[in-house]
Image (cartoon, rainbow, N blue to C red; front, top):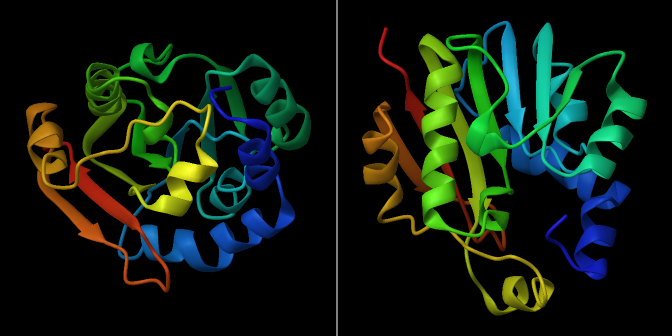
Length: 193
């Protein structure tokens, strides 16, 4: 997992999970219709997954880190399908999901090219009319300090609409967070019907 020890401790904490559940996810998903079959890319320790399983009848999570995937399966495997795999080459069929979501994980993808492959894969596995939605952090001094020794490749909010459009999405929006202390963006795009 491309995170240092302090970062892993934060992201696996109950405090982080509560913040995601009570504050961050409601903002990131405000107005998003997830539908009945949701794919989460890069769930990490499952802070968002535990919320998503209450929002959709079927949830699949794809996690690249084998240890994290095993832990997720042990914890949530009775309520979600956990897949150990790479989001830039999803081991899932075309047009399978009503929504694909990614929260605070894209900055851990080491290159823009790999991020673009993830966008293309999200588009491929979405059913026509499906939505790709998510959020990610933006750089700040505190964010940079937390990522010492980590993979950190933040999304450029000005370029992201064009990158999502190039992957095939329509109706793309990218918005900054209004949350206190929020240095994040949320994004949405739809696969044409």
